[in-house]
Amino acid sequence: MTDEATDTKIIDGKAFATGLRAKVAAQVDVLKSRHDMEPGLAVVLVGENPASEVYVRNKARQTRAAGMRSFEHRLPATTSQEDLLALVGRLNDDPLVSGILVQLPLPPQISADAVIATIDPEKDVDGFHTTNVGLLAVGGDGMVPCTPLGCLMLLKNRLGDLAGARALVLGRSNIVGKPMAHLLIRESCTVTVAHSRTRELAEECRRADILVAAVGRPRMVPGDWIRPGSVVVDVGINRVDAGNGKTRLVGDVDFESALEVVSAITPVPGGVGPMTIACLLHNTVLAACRRHGIAVPDV
Ligand code: GUN
Image (cartoon, rainbow, N blue to C red):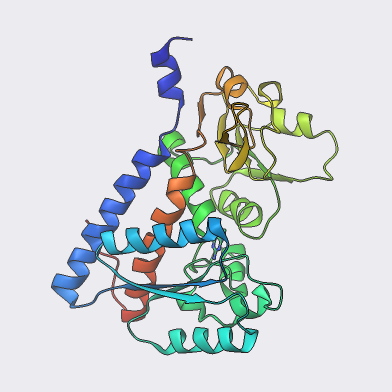
């Protein structure tokens, strides 16, 4: 394959996310100048998980870069569930806060379900509250989880109309697999959800025109499981030994062998990853507009 043929197959999530963040920033400008409102995102981090620290720092930086208010709440790992729920309650009541995100995972003494259930569904920019899960399932207008929303945007940007496509979602998590399946059903795809107990997984994968891999197993899907000409979205972010005493990030799909057969594929890094925070900012603007009863600015 020539370099040019390879380049056109690779879906540049980083560039798409940069464009989406610029669009969000332009919408925020309009909200400030015409409606005198400034969306705000509150991010809560409990404990000192190093990966979570990086995510939270990036979320705050990109929120400010889009012109929005950022509120960071860092609590010790020993925080009680009662204290965290009280903070969420205050954020629910705070008119400056349009969106609330409590970074997962949480320490063992705190139930993530209890925390998510306490967030005002209209401020639930993660789309994890059962009200939003239910709205997605019945085709309603709730908050959609950021990572699957980013995957869908990349797919529609590449393929246009997805109606009738056979889609396989590999993974059944509440954060990615299940909402992704609902989003693809909404696009009139024929959707299969596969997971660790699926029989004849390779065969299931080979039937798919669209394959979304979200299992968290490094390079689990080889090129010969992939239908020629299909589009692959790789949600996996797995750190592996690079051999030279260093580590590197790989997806759930074996990128090199997949590239030989696909019509398009998202790389890791630089594919789905950058879309997640861009979609979080998009959801924050949406939440702010809904709260104020105004349309999202057309920019
Ligand atoms: N931890 C890893 N991914 C996510 C996410 O999308 N939202 C939250 N709240 N925590 C996470």
